[in-house]
Image 1 (tube, rainbow, N blue to C red):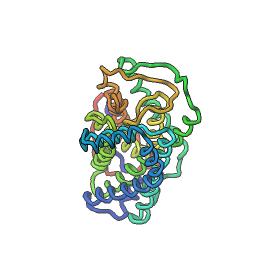
Image 2 (spheres, one colour; image 1 turned 120 degrees about the vertical axis):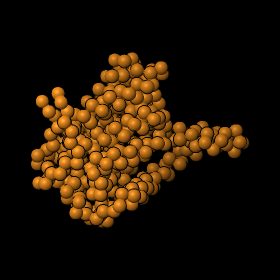
Image 3 (cartoon, one colour; image 1 turned 180 degrees about the vertical axis):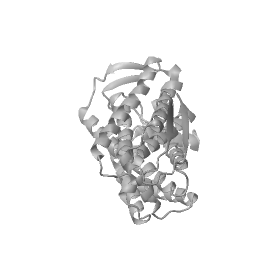
Image 4 (cartoon, rainbow, N blue to C red; image 1 turned 45 degrees about the vertical axis):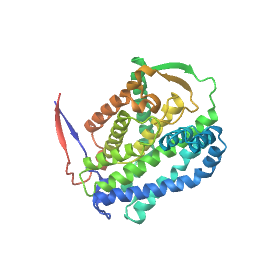
Length: 340
């Protein structure tokens, strides 16, 4: 029996081919500019309350005093301020998540106004939008739960039971915040950047470049490691292939959002280095097994997530593309046969 592993040519990609494109290096520079504009707008939303919090924070004031006295270096100053900023009050953390909508809007405006692309080329297709989103939400919940299961079985995570201090109001707000944040990263990295790149380079290369860029955007997160970077690239590849196979962006938006929400607010695990937040359950990472649980970065920095991401990529490559989204002319960029 032969199982074909391929990357499809979809209507979404073909429609984008007709829009204005640039050499790859310029596409990357433009992406950086679009991202920075979105980040600036986000900063305008959350900057004032965050600055107010920092200047009223005793630990922050002590760090500044230590630096002024010459007892810590510039690198230590940056590290300590980053650590303090990653432990914001939950109200500010939720506001930061919600503010990522600025990135979504910026990317959409750029694609429409400058590249003259329809929103459908970013994956915003009307057909079965709700069912695709719900399916993605289920996928995101299941695959992250598999990573948790791996860590529990191997003893890398310890289950501490139900959180006695659950704040259901915050849980609900985090859910809405992660819905916005997950969509923002997928719209920017996959809907905009990946699709734009494939107009000049093979789709497999576009997936790779956008996935590496996705990982690079997390380099300043607390607890980042080589394995965490690799896992972020793998997740990006999985998301890119999933989007192509389904022919829309709804599913990967839901996968990303539910992955983060389930990780932080259901299981109580750090999300890409973000500090502990209100959660339904409590988990403790075993210090001697950080290679599996990711340590400070959270499960995304461990081998448990490596396993589920690799399996996810293989499953999606072997999954049949939605027939309604396949372009009439279907040049296949890469195809391999796996003998079973």
